[in-house]
Amino acid sequence: MNNPSLSISNPNPLHTTPLQKIALALVGLGLLLLLIVWSTNEAIAPGAIFLLTVSFLSAGTALFIREEYVKHPAGIKNNGVWFRSLSNRGIWGWIVGVLFTAFYVCLYWFPACLGVGTPNRGLAAVFDPLSWLLRNQSANQWFIYGT
Image (tube, rainbow, N blue to C red):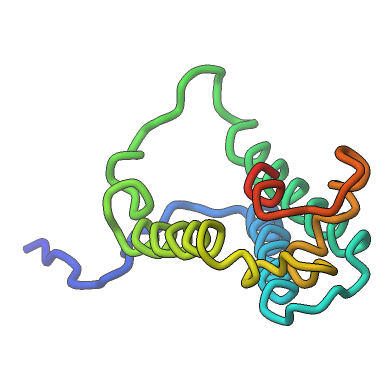
């Protein structure tokens, strides 16, 4: 007799390689760094923090994608996407939806929460070096959104 699992999580998780776990840790560090800078509302070496954050996020994402698809033949890989938690109204989909909504509320009605001001602080200060390089002015909430 086959008893179905009553577990909330997947009882048969997909195999994650050690390299993918390292990649996810890098992405997590990048997101954590952004969250810390955003929550402290302080301008702590914005150029270095921006480079670290972008480096962690880019390297982690590229490493994970490479490890995920290097063993498979070329083509569309959307097997099981409909049943994943992120794309099927699961817990991760709700978490991401709430975070995006909170970001947009801050963006439109409370830009000071993003650190936009004179001078910029927190998250806005992280994007200042890139904004000065590209636009020759300080970052505002729309530059953060576009980046």
